[in-house]
Image 1 (cartoon, rainbow, N blue to C red):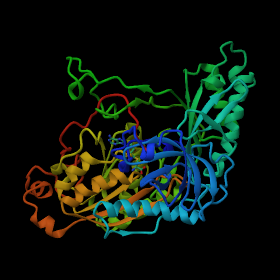
Image 2 (image 1 turned 45 degrees about the horizontal axis):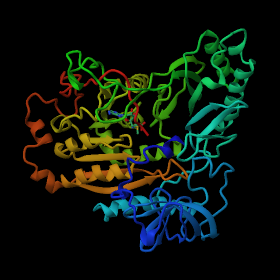
Image 3 (image 1 turned 135 degrees about the vertical axis):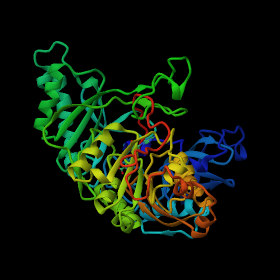
Length: 558
Ligand SMILES: C[S@@+](CC[C@H](N)C(=O)[O-])C[C@H]1O[C@@H](n2cnc3c(N)ncnc32)[C@H](O)[C@@H]1O
């Protein structure tokens, strides 16, 4: 699925020094064929063997396999090779349960026995922690993923001369594999694949209402780009990306499809555009520039932002609501949701395990990268005062409405904020009794650097990228935070992606040795909001610094 293909380069922490090299071992060149005995599985799911003293990475090969492979690249520290033939299968190899496995880039490890796959995936977390100074950390058994659990997905939509295509991209390619079913998905999402294909096909054949009497017949199958679908408690929430804005007939067709497929809500959005460099009206760049406005995210300096327009709701037949920590919330179309209900429950359970008694005693907890409130609502429901910081305005609007609906408004303070560009300072964070952060794959370095100086005693981290997690964890550890326990979670079954939840406690010795930093300074500050009160409300004290980012909306979430 989309998550399984992104960020290939970003987190290849084990791939430094891999420049191409002319001379391979014994003159090995790209295209040469070699036999390799696979002894391990790498963090990207490639089988690893050895040739002439150098590691060889062979895609799709598994430990114990003996394979014939073609060399793709000879690099300074490794050889990359493409699988040609299985000479002898290893003991962990099984028949993949899905007929699309191989061509479809959605899953990469269905051919590995589930037990071994799960051991490998948990081992990724164990290994990276051990290699980064956290060998003593307690690592819980992994919360396993199961087929039929994935409650959100993004399909690629294409049209060929003969048919409409609904599916997933091939690994490392733009080609889309047409699928009838996906066994990862909850049944209602799986059933939507065929309905969506029929809808696109009907558009092409002039059978759909959108085509009736409309010379331009919009949208045609070729205008569909992708679809984001989430199974909510109210029904499916579908967002289609289209190459052009639908006209009246197109909107009617989308509404009719929502009726036929019994969707809760259907929206459309245009294709994303590359963001221009932020330019100041005075000729400067960035922060003081013309794009400054209410916090909605926006292009981040040095990133590769694609501006995603807000989806426009065509019809909302029922509320597309979900329950989070006992509170009902209706996230915005295509808003972030944890990929599986079981995964979300496990993560909320972990966070409540860390902060439960603090919440019950009315402590103040920051939820950073809060989305529409998965943790904030659960914590507030339990009694905490929560400051929820997030860049996406629509997610915060949903969180605000949900808090109001549950009578929790007085416990939830919303903080629209781009946390990568304008992380709250250690001093601002010092009012908190606890903090949870759940960033995108890039991690939360700017926030963590401030947290490390803040003196906040209890911190929970949720991460979808162990590489950026250990980077951030080392910053906290260097400041005296002990990584108490980690819980791996498999929300992306049969992929290389693993999530984790972690608990950090500030070492009492480090806390008492702290000389007038963050928390201590704030306690001494007569203008600081008293602990246990709602910052930004009674005291009027809002965390300093710009709470607004450039206009527009850049997406970079998992
Ligand atoms: C992994 S999601 C977690 C959301 C939420 N904790 C949940 O479990 O539903 C990451 C969140 O970070 C937000 N985000 C991404 N970049 C951000 C930034 N620069 N500043 C603040 N929030 C950001 C996304 O909008 C998204 O809601």
